[in-house]
Image (cartoon, rainbow, N blue to C red; front, side, top):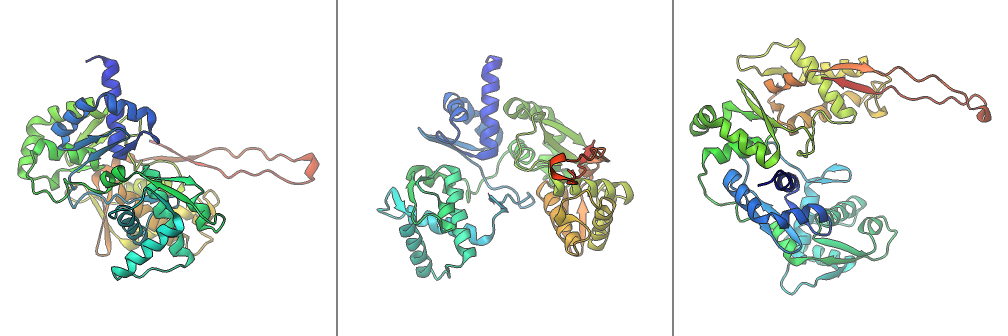
Length: 390
């Protein structure tokens, strides 16, 4: 196999792993690679991870068995972040209406909403027409459109939700929708090889924790880890960073994950500063993890906010009484999503891998103030930006 072919397979595999559902309309370039190398991709995903790849003329779907209960939860994200339970409810109701026997391939959104509410009432599910309900319903529609199984042919669901469009015409790809929702690997009783279960942990979880491995997985990890490293490097371009407590998979391109860390934005910078402060000042336990009370977390976050007063966005400024609680919730959510933190009764535990992210916080020098001659004494001010140096 030539290097060029290997790179194409790796690029296609990385996109499938991150998105799991690709359509010709939304991902034309990558979808072409998946079609071109479908046989090799099916073989590698099956042998290495126990996944099943379905490739049709207009879409590709990567089917995965359920992850262990210890894996971080992967939430659907709308435009405003992770969606709530009611959006999931509406996704299910919409899918049921769109896939009912004899359902049309095109719907006016008013007719679809009426069908959804009728189905909900039949099932004993209470729905309403408040602004929040309407927003959640629109979010569910746009999520399906984002997957490429529903198309806003005429009009916009978002504009309809805001009252700007009186009607929207939606087109449905029934076959693609059925593959998006159905996963025959879920519910299958199967005992898989330790090589596959370990590969899945490394690919799907941010961190492989050796304390959670079965005896078979531990034996394979000690004996044949090199084979696993080679497979993941060839298929995804991932590299393993191994420590006594476990390992994590990382890549140079930094685009193979849906949860980057540290990443950009004030909440992720706060999470990085919290980890740096915690592992630098608290004594780890016998397994290398650091466990502290929730009160200690609040104290550290409050001190960070106070130290960087005036350099954060407004909703994290200490002058806002709700800022510490808001920042603490954001930091805990981010660190849980990347497997660096677990929450117990009144405590949080930070994984030993957090130590690798220690950072030094610096600030750019403030730009000189300038005066706009045409505006009299109007000054242009810029907030300092926080930068982390690993």
